[in-house]
Structure formats: C-alpha cells, structure tokens
Amino acid sequence: MQKQKVLKLMALLLAVVMCVSLCACGESNTPVEDDYEALGGLNVGGAQGGDNNSGTGNGTGNGNANGNGGGTANQSNSYLNNIPKKLQGTTVTFAAWGDENATEYAKVAKLFTKKTKINVKWVTYNEDKYISSIVEQNAAGKGPDIVITNTTFPSAVEAVQELPKYFDVNDGFWDKRVTEGLSVKGKKYFVNSYNSPFANGGTFVFYNKQIFANNNIKSPQDYIDEGKWTWENLEKCVREAKQKGFDGGSILPQLVWSTTGAGMINYNPKTATFTNGLNDASQKSDILAALKLVASLRKDGVISNNPLTRFSSGQMAIAVLNNFGMKYNGWFKAMSPSALGVVELPSKFNGKTANYYGANLRAYGIGKDAKNVEGAYYLLRFYLDIDNYDEAGADIFVNKNIERFYKETYLPNFKKGKINIEYMQNPLSLVGSPWNQASAGGWGDVFGPVSPEEVETNLAARANIVDNAAKKATEKLQGIIK
Image 1 (cartoon, rainbow, N blue to C red):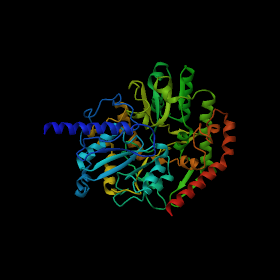
Image 2 (image 1 turned 120 degrees about the vertical axis):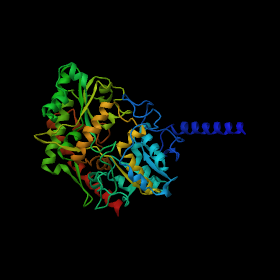
Image 3 (image 1 turned 60 degrees about the vertical axis):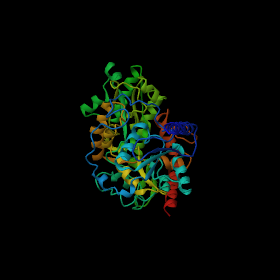
Image 4 (image 1 turned 90 degrees about the horizontal axis):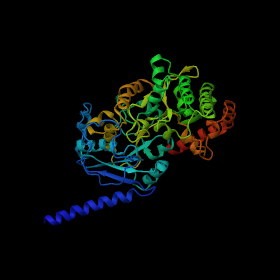
C-alpha cells in the first residue's frame, strides 16, 4: 500500500513537470493557466510570464522567501467576513500577460485563497493580442473573470461587462477618477484602487544618484528641495550629465505634456466620443513644447537609443519611465540601492503648473463571459490593496527605499492629485499609426531627432491622422455598446 502511494505521488510530480515544460514553450493565442488550490498551497499550472528571476530584488523580504507571510495583517479587511460561504471552493480566473501573475504578486493570490478558500487561476496571454484573444475566448464560452486594460481603451470595453452592484466606486477604496474616466454614457466598466500596486499615472523620474553626486551635478532631489523641480530643470540635468560623458536620459513626450492636462486625443465619457486634442490651442501648445523638447534632446545626442540597458548599467543619468522600474522583476533589478534614486515628475512646464498624474493607465474589469463575478470582486478588492502584500510576504519592490517612496510619498500624493488619462494609443493603432518610433506608420518624424521647426511641420502633416483616429475610436466604442 505504501509503495502504491509513492508511485502515485511520483506520477503526480511528473505530470506537473511536464505541464510546466509544455506551457513554457513558444507563443500562442491559447492562454496558459496557473491554478492555486483552495488551501493556498500547490501551483499545478504553467509558466508565470514576466518574471525572469527567482530572487526578490535587492530589498529585504517581508515574511519568508516562500511567500507564507510573516508580515502584519491588514486591519481593513473586515469585508472578507461578508464573503458568502457558497463561494468557498469556487475559482476566479484572472487574465494577465505576466505582470499581475509574476511570482511575488502571486503570493497575494495564495494568501487570498488561504483566507477565503476561493481558488485563483491565472491565464496568461500574449500582451499584444490580449484583448482580441479574450474576445475570442468570450465568444467560445471560455472567457476569464478578470480583464486588464492599459493602452487598450476603448477596444477593451468589448471584452468586459458593466460593473456589477458589488463595486461601490464611492466607498473610498476604489479610485473613482479611473472608473469615471473609462465610463461610457454613465455605464461603468473598470476599476483600480487608490492603494494599488499598479497605480494609474505611475510614471517617475529614476536617476543614478552616484552620477550626480560624483560629478557635482545638481540632482532631481536637489531641485525638489529648492522648490524648482520643472521639466526645464530636468532638461538641465540630462544635458549636464551628457557634458560629463554620460548618456543624459530617456524621456517620452507624452509623459511631459500629460502633466499639464493636455492630451493628443481626448475622451468624453458622457457622450462616448473621442476628439483631437490638437484642435484645442492650449493643449496643442503643451504638446508641441513637449515634442520639441524631446526632439531637441535627441538631435543633440542627449537621449539614449538604448535607455534600459544604459541606465541599469550605470551609464545614463535619468530615465523617465513607469513603475515597472521600481519592481523586483523590473528593468533596474540589478542596480544597487545606493545608486537608484526616484522622484515624482516635475511640477511645472512651458510656463504653467504641471500637476496632473497621467499618461499611464491600468484598470480592471469583469469579463463579459465571467463565471464567478462575485468571487472576482472579492479578489480584486484584496489584490489591489498594497497593504495586503506585507502579510503575503510579497516583496514586489527592487529595494526598501523605493518601497517607502511609493507607499509613503507617491500614493498619498496621487490620491490627492488630479489624473489625466492619455487615450491616444489605442485610437492611433486602430488607424495603423501606432505611437512609437520604429513601426511602419509610427511617429519617428515627430519624436526626433529633428529640429523644432520640423516637429511643428511634421505634426501638422499628421493632423488628419489624429482626426481619423478619434473618429475611428468613437465608431469602435459606439459599435461595442449598441
């Protein structure tokens, strides 16, 4: 009898290994699944995308390395006591592309399962085909319970249903600015929280503290301490670093203009219509100024063509990027805590206050074919509260200094601030003109390296493209909600 048990256990382990090996090979539209049993322990699924190292970054772990917790329990989780018993043993399917289901984040799902006995199944899609694949799965009756949107609005609306009654976006936990900004004629489809590990507008100025300290260059933190943190002084930082023999930095123009409240393409949730932001003189002025700034830096060789590698290797002074740079599995995971600094974006540009959080979007909806809507609500409520990550032993930041900055400085400021969602990326893609430099039909002639005069001429030549993108996005959305 004992021998039979051993043989069964060996067979089970072999099956697990084979499943992991098969799921990790190649790319496919077919989703890859990860299951977590009701008691929170066993991973019996495939590879977790987006997490290419087994370590926990440079920081000291909260709890133990196995993700069994050890941190302080979140005292605001009383809502878990209201979970209906009928949900115990059910499964919530969470569709991701490798961020939300990376190893450290998955520990939070395991803790959720341990507390609620609601299983979590991760389904991993190719990010480039994420929404279209989910739409196909929905049509086949195999859709997930939870869907993410980032640059995929309005197309993402096709993959989700209207938020159910469980979501009270006015309860102080959910960030109603996000929900309202992605609503459609009063109907609400997406949420994120004020206390999210994937907060909206999460773009930051990362800088190499050693480059500034060792070369007598005034740093971003120095400008903040003086009350002079402007985009123009950020430009001064990168130009001075270039003069000292380093790559100056990496800056994307939309990250600049979004802080002023401008947008290449605007969206009106009440009418579900998109419009060309360049038709507004104030917005156009800020957009042009941002484009000219970046084009000028490119023309002068200040901006690096390989920013992630150059910054992480200590050869570049500044990188203006989203919060993946803060994460244990992110771009800068190999950098020493003594070198990696981070501050918020500048607060002035082009002669005006620039106090909007914007450009980067992250929100979550309930899949149109969701089978466990109520369970999905409770999982999102738990997962999107960063205060649960300590108890789960989920060490998601690259080091403790970065973690403190995100939790103690950024999140409180973000909650009090204004957000400005830049809607342009999905509309521009719908008309074959993606917002990047490399792709056919892309915007390389506007990014630079070109002269300021050429920027203005090239942007004017693309006015019809922006008009068509706004029109196409409106038609797309109106067709979805019919």
